Image (tube, rainbow, N blue to C red; front, top):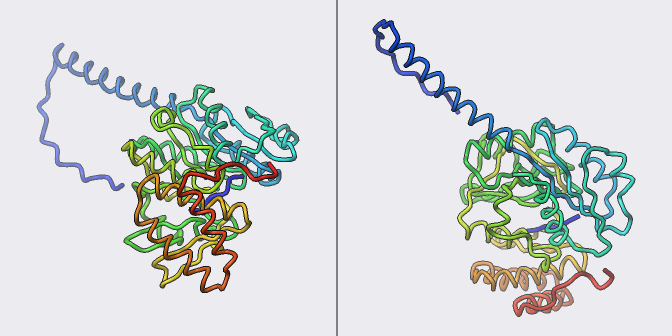
Length: 346
């Protein structure tokens, strides 16, 4: 539903010195203490694992076939899911799909078009209300690639002490490539084979397609901001995550499938700047508006400078004066904090 742009070897064991042989009550007490200590550690580990309750926060908008695929993939996960909080803002209710899927699905019908940002905010609140300690974000046109995805994300979250962990987002039509780029060593890549051997990618994340988030994160930084509607809410959310100093990363050994947006990327100057030109007038205007708003909100001169050069250059070289005027109108409105809201037909 949402529209979005923009990893151990075991150490060698040291030689153990010969141990003297002891006997008597003192050794029995020592052995008992060691057993109790080991039992306590194991109990703590098991308690942590049992506390890993997960609720899914998902959104949908008139993608019934893709939604059915998502719900089936969630049902196959080896790690248990307490409930799926599903917000449906579409023009055709997905009740038949939900009933066919079965399981614990909290279906939330919205007669208002909330957009991706508002839909996720609604779904996240419902998921949190279930009492789960982790919230797994899912878009209706994506799905976990295999049944171990959630279990591996939980393992990585504990191993690296993370607040947020996401899988790779592999392109639906070509899973050897990623739907969104990563910058590795200063270079952009969407080659899955380049990232998988790395195992874990710290400080990198894509939120609304499979990110697993501790419930406490939302109390710390809030929910997705519904005023963005589409295009930009995930950028704002990441900025708040960074500001709060939360720990996050991407586990490159599991993936969620999601349609790619490569056709929207228009690299210029040898790829030094890559303007994104969404398909559709409303998506395009929303992206331009939200990008300008975010550049001002976070005082990001790099974004602003790239936009002031990249977008005019692209439209002028395409001889698209109408596109240039539309970009300027939306961008200037966003920079002034105006022009937000759903499409006129919503």
